[in-house]
Length: 390
Image 1 (cartoon, rainbow, N blue to C red):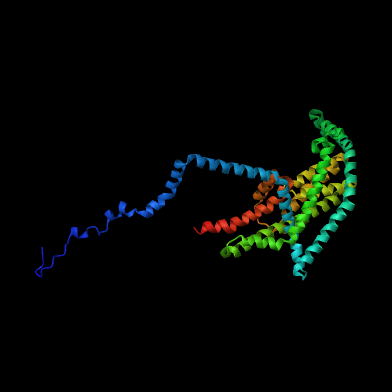
Image 2 (image 1 turned 90 degrees about the vertical axis):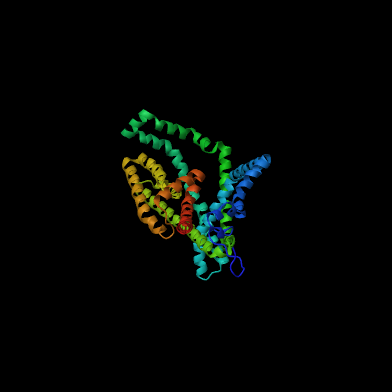
């Protein structure tokens, strides 16, 4: 049909919406073009690669598994070296606040590191030259008198009744006097020599690596910062500095906690009549104080055993001291020392200490708490803000 002017009339009605019309029909299969096929491509490519070359895919998977197993084996073989390296780094972070304090007072870092190194070496020399011989003498006397202490325990009626039923004092006496404890601990004389040599080597390596990390700590920090993208480097610098400060603050505070445990136990043992073994036992108490949560319990058990062999009253006083001071240490001393460096719930401290002790022994228990504090810092500063931003 045409208009009077001869032009064709424009079509109207449903027919006018031909192919160009939009609607449900337009969003059919034609709409799912290359974009949709691109979205399905990765899954299809992965499945097709497995179907085309199953042997090659399986072979590469087995190689990856063998490489992972080999890497785990290498790490297990190097476990002792890795522990020394990590321990040295943590110790250097603990000494670094003293170096930084000297730097802020105007000394150059090289001079400050040298001065701190000399102080540490003098302390070690004094310990080896004066304390170790005394501890060795008192330790030998303690071992020689151990059977007498055990025999004195039998004079207590309650302990004698328990020993008559379980024979535990007789077993301990036989174990000590027979010398089998040396074989049990070190595997004989040769094993004891190897243990001493290994200990000396570990100590020397720890000292050397600690001094190296202490002198190169700013360069190590800058290397860690450069691993992050430039846009995120200020944030990484802040988090890394916070972690380093927490680790250093914890280890510095632990030295003070250990010194208080050792000094307090020495004074207590001297007062109650255990002065002959006070120096050796206070060093053991100080070493066990490095173990969080449960270290003081082992110290109390050791010292109380010797105290009860002297008299029941001395034993009760010893137990009361350790229980009382453990509460003072847990609720007064450590909160004041670690209030600014750590913010870790007690449950995580216990779990971290137990896990570290199972994995790496006393060293693992010592390093577990600052590690947990660092991970908790990353959780609060990185994970939680990321989840809140979703």
